[in-house]
Length: 589
Image (tube, rainbow, N blue to C red):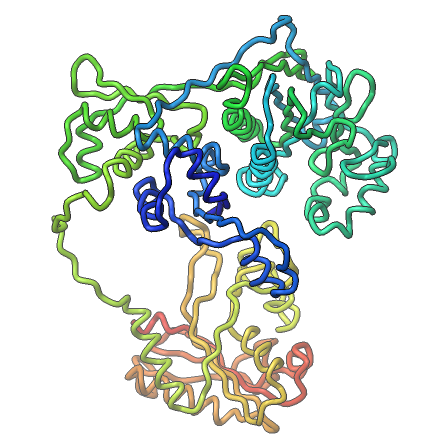
């Protein structure tokens, strides 16, 4: 959940009253939020960097409030105060309006076809005659950053640019050019750089280096120019210094470039609705025209209101209350969802404002009704269905085996379910196509490319990491592997397996064989053909030739044991012989 830091005194001033810490904590709970921490800038620096670094830092009390990840309208002081005031019925939810500029000509943003290769979408709007104070300005910048980290997915989906409209002139052009052809003075820099030079410059920047990967491998970089050729921004990296906003800025041009148009509209709506209350005409936003490469034109922001109709009975049944239709409509209105009872008296017509992009389904409205009613006020009832919990048989068997394997002198290991292709194929002298492995489509690292098909590689890596421990090393693991299975709806299935290794100066085949006999004894499977268990010689590239056996139980092959091949030992950087046991325990349920 995102955490919003707000100055306590500023918050109380905006709310029009003072709360004790306990009272405000209770108010947050009633509204579906959580007061996570009460601190100050000085305390934070002291805790993270030491008391000496904290000298001179602010002692102003900060409230850190946990906000649901889909409530983008609560990520700044303005949205938080507005929501709480409507909830406490101190004000009505404002109605946001898109207006035409006084001269009738909206600012225009023209998108060229070159942008299709990098970030094809853009939206824009203008906040006209806005008044900034230091607190408002800081909140404006912080909201951009919160949105960048949240719905914008660290700028990969959307990048927000804000500009002083009085320093630039439209129409604006959003295009894409080779990095060598882009040259401008970036924000807070003293000279001009080409885009290539900027990428090198920001590789050491603690903040911006995290965004370079988004476009650095592209043949062209996105860039926005005004009619005089001045660069507004090079999204998603940096804005130009020429158009930067300040406390004296009166007109703000906001542009969002994106790979996802729907989310771009949401982000633009959030930016303008949160701060349009500071415009000369509160809660109005000046429209901007976006021209697409195919000639289409669209006006933004959309600020779309929509209506949903649902029954009071639906909410009463789902929440577990019995309230009148009128009262439920009042509860929803407290959550910034204007609601009215329809003429038949049974249905509720709910108006969803542009700030509530989290409301997608009737269940989201029901959740808000429950929140406004108060979770603590919902009467406790006994469930209609009685169920008795029981441990999953497979897990119960696994737990029983774990205890007895530990009693036999083996130490349990827990290894990663994901591994590299090399771990389950090349290192075990197998072909990856024979392993039935499920591959990760976009692995972040080479260590996590596939879901494991055997526990053996994980145990051998554990042995390699503990080579300095006294010999012998006896390790086991009982966990799931993942195998492709076309008969399953997801195309794969989990398979619970038992794997054990014995690592010493001698192979210790008799030790691992004895462990297998003990496991069979615990599973009450007697030696012998038919309903018993037996082993027979087998060939397996992972094991030393002539030192591998296949294990059969109740007529079915359940696994293998033997001495590992010297090449397998070398691949895992081990220097001594090792024997292993690998069996499927699901047939014994």
